[in-house]
Length: 606
Image 1 (cartoon, rainbow, N blue to C red):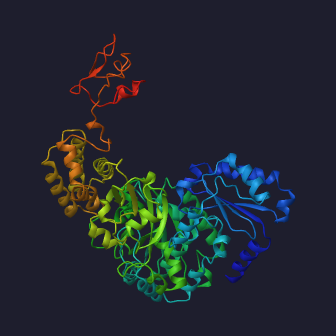
Image 2 (image 1 turned 90 degrees about the horizontal axis):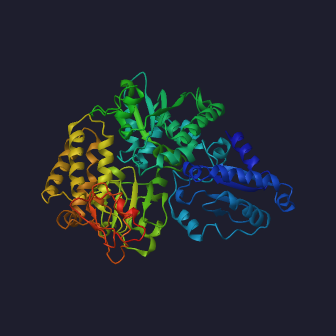
């Protein structure tokens, strides 16, 4: 192991070259990373003989994975020996030649496009564990992972007894980072204690929540880190088989995971007698269908077994009777990516982070009307207010915060007065929200709570497996009531009915997804009831997001009677509009299709 690490270290320091890295995460590629990478290849080839580059030892080009700042892709880092790293944001191919000429050859960073000081400050302020190597190493190059200490934790774990590994993880109080927050060491201990001829260890890399992508990014950018954590867990519970379950549409993660498995086998980190020990295990990637319910543990296992992904009532829990009836331990990718650090640095290191009930840190997906969005990793002592106002730079254009949506489609809403809550599991539940898949969106007054709730309930209704009545029927009834409220047909008694139905669904649903599917309604009614009443009583959506409440009015002084609005109206609601007579809209016939507004070239329709 030492020889491999020394060889990798020697190759990286043998020659002090100028190093260029391009972010090739999914978001980076979506923003054109491939074209940027090719342009750098072209520029390096054209300038390879430049004396200034040769004096610096030449120039190398590589890819890196996700570092979390997805909204700033394509991200490019320039490392010139003896100088601080310079990061360029939102790089386009036409910027590459200038970066090469002015910075790499001329030695002067290009001000336009270079990250401002706060970029580095916000990176430094984070508590990065799962994202520790994201954006710094090539996730497809095992040597780069070894050079930063990769697989040393696995080597250490193999010198310990399996029970000692479990005890160390249990002592750290590491809790599952998929939303449930179960103590990881206890899950491992339970699975290890069951007598069985087979024992499975699994990665849950499925994320159906449209606001979350932590596991995908960790699997893309810290691929070997996830695998190392999985292997440590496999040894701890003496698993016989390992499976990485992820979505088939996570194509980049799937490719990199399969490549990592191949490289690990070649180096002796996977397969028979791992690193010369008596422990042997292999692993494969299972690509599941893109179903939200597929992320629920028992549904996920049913999918692997070739069955329809229906949740099962528990107990028995998966750690006792899981995949194919054998004891199975399941954690998400982010949890496994944390394990190598706990083994290498010790449980006490992890215990120094976070509150007493939730030690450690958590990756959050951040979005909304904020200055900085993407993925960030925080100590769980961090409050929602600190995330929004400090790490994310506050609401853009100096507007006021109206609502924070936490937990995605299965999460809830918090008003500005309640955002001093810490981001640990229990604190968020006490506030009425949940961590869920750890997404946080902060909005100004341009957001409508009813509109956001309709999206969450509509998504959950479409994605329900349909096995239990509360989800299958209840979510549809709730969605219909919300539609009525948003379209002007709501009644004030709906609010008590919504409250009652949501509480019933929360208690009687078969699985955790059903229990949390109604959080958006419950927290909306708790904190934003006046907004619901405004929609029902006053028939007004102040954010102008509920199109069913639009009132179309012709401004007579601006109307030129051109008749352009009459033809596209599908209900004949518009009269006049010709022969110098201003148009008039009959709101009893109007269906709020917006066709007249789009057709008017004189902004006469409001």
